[in-house]
Length: 297
Image (tube, rainbow, N blue to C red; front, side, top):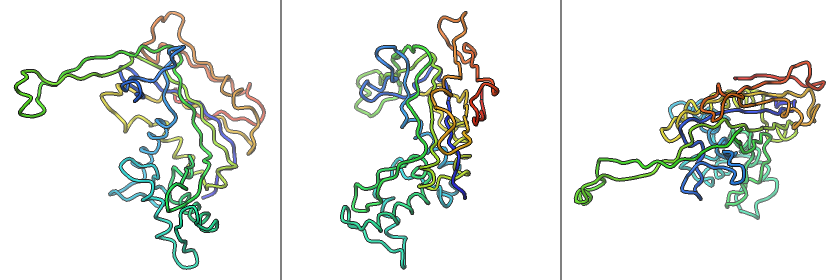
């Protein structure tokens, strides 16, 4: 598989209705927000987690991942168990020895290449793999995604909920069920920026097939991640700017600012995607060497 040779910048739009798109553990798991503007936030690691999960589901059959599409950062697994693999599976002249920080640089490089070849998220996002006895070095990934920020203010709301079933026999004496809390926002339209660097892709082996899978994951990011706590979440727009060259033909920010997302003037409190207008740039107005691809909205 050939590695990508073009730079890409992209804008990703998604929304959430009557749910919690990304709870903050430091705030009782209430939706993240900017305390000055009250715009909602969704962390980059939250979005990457969903991409990892989609790739895992798409490339796994009978609990066995397709060759080259393992997931390094996987819920319930230790990173060390994955870093151990190249030290166990490389044999013959390629055999390497684990010595932590004292591992030979040549062995670290072999382990790093093996991890890039076998784990999608290492190839895409990079990883720090030098913190255990099984030193696989560090990888700077070609795919980077920012925090997502809502277009307008959100209103986090706390709801008290009850469960009529009792946890144990001793709880029956209380005469009441269990009370809990749920945090939601009525609605929020979020925008994230993404960058794909072909220079780093050449070092990790991030291929055209990997890129196609990434676009598919973003377009279907929430379809396999349904939860009552997250309400209704949907991908609403994926606008991809493809550069003719590796180094790029225009500044990313200039491209991002060419997409206008505005609340309709007759709407005071948005409650649906139709309360907004998304205006992508006219292809003829783009800088030379830039092609606009996609646009789910």
